[in-house]
Length: 263
Length: 358
Ligand SMILES: Cc1ncc(C[n+]2csc(CCOP(=O)(O)OP(=O)(O)O)c2C)c(N)n1
Image (cartoon, rainbow over all chains, first blue to last red; front, side):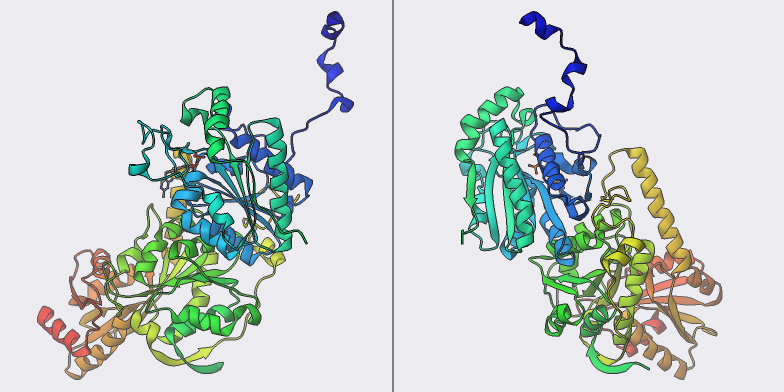
């Protein structure tokens, strides 16, 4: 048995009938600049898979944030705009209002969306802009070297909370996703992750809904995707995923927070 | 001759935006320019032409809505007054960096800080030298009448699209609030998406198989490439300086002395010229219509002919620096200004001229 398996060559394996996964055509050939183990790449891929499956490449306009994913437009093969730090929902509003037939989405980190861009986030949600917001929560400022984010947990260490986040001094970790779910302008609000195969599948479904719902013109879809930041958290990727399960997700539980009412 | 209407400066801007076929206005109220958004709201531009109107949550948001729509090739504008325009500077810098066309109106009030709601010209530096961070310039138009408020919307948009650069109408509380008769133009159609795709191939209208994806960004991490881009901008501003200088000359031909003033100040100075001439003083007025590009060349020519130049501004003396740069010490240059929202009288300008030169 073992001998037989060793005789298989790569030509034997790379066959049409053996294909179980194919990279979407809508990711460019540019090599991701993300750290090995980071979830940004998976989130990028899922969004592009959905755009491909829905066949809306010619109608999709993405907005990159300031943060680790500032260069998202290098990887996503669609028209994209790069926003100032936190302003992506305002750009999305400008684009969608003047071109209502497009599929418009922002892709933003927690610092971008929940600190400097809080006003833009809340008001785009509250106006019920018919766009999707993909909110990538890694609990830290990855790009600038691991400073505290609004979502950093109590006692969690970062370069600006080297002894752990002190709530008295630094305030509480912000559950902005629960907050926007309270607003009448949001249509679909969910929290997902991409650290396990099952989670990836669920996250993709959520992303797909966020695109499809734009056609209904019933408000904003807000998809939080919790990812690890092994560099910022100063952990090996596997440890980071474990830490995420044990510490981060209990505070930011996965699942739908607001779903469209069934008729 | 088109239709004549009695309008406020701020209303003329709004009507001009609709008639010029603008695709959108995004703004936030502030005195003395709230009539722009109020007039638009009353006109229901979405019904008239399909033009989008949105009151944003802040000036930060509104200028970034402009960025998004402009990035998609749309003809969009915003307006504010001084404190609000300060907030817009972040977005304006990004818009200049991404080379997007748009129109920004500043109906200036006195500052610094919350200052006063009365007219002022104290945002000259901010408007003509960049305003936000980085090496860039706006194309700056200075209307001196309600008619020019109307006309400069079309001109501003045309220049903005011609050079893919943000344009600014630098007005003040007096011109924004005053009523004059205005000749209204024909309604221009808004551009279709197909027209935008053909005319602005850089715009994010959705990637089609016939082209590469379009990216609107101001980011460049490679210093050598960033410097190349900076040089490209410098070259653009040089072209603008060569081709787009606009000014008006009033009784300048035989002038011994020259006033330089724009906007509300220039209206006062017109009267001063009249009064001076009655007294036998050969006074002229050069009114810059574009503040960037500045009529430096023309002023340099006058520096050879006149005995003195006085810059008259409702500020502590901002444009006077550009006048001085233009004449390179070949002639005496003075400044006269009032601040805090006070508009100088023609008499006091004449008095100041006499004191400084005669
Ligand atoms: C106006 C402004 N302030 C600060 C910064 C610096 N800065 C860049 S990215 C960033 C935080 C990014 O964190 P987050 O949004 O959580 O994204 P991540 O990098 O973790 O993916 C900061 C503070 C900036 N670029 N612009």
